[in-house]
Length: 120
Image 1 (spheres, rainbow, N blue to C red):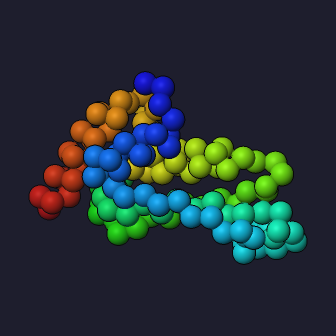
Image 2: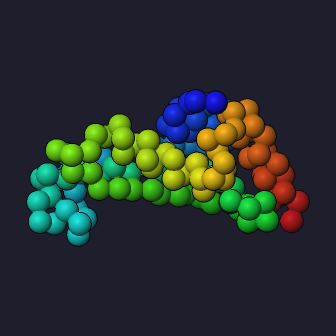
């Protein structure tokens, strides 16, 4: 499996396991960027719908999970920031081993977690 984190998230969205949305704030309004807001933007990933937890017992339904990171427009590419945020979100949703899983295996894990949540 050598798909990028962004590609995996997109495929989970295509399979109706979650909904994702990318947002950009330019200039950034964060404290981190306050010295030179015009040199920064905030890259935000908003995931809605089902997200599991890292451990099977912690699987929960969440309305919305937000991941964001400031980006210095001169030093970090937007694509790299998106990959980073997608990676962090996949660790939350699927587990640290997401990189070793196929998208089909990720979907299977999410289905199992969803059933476990519903049966409580």
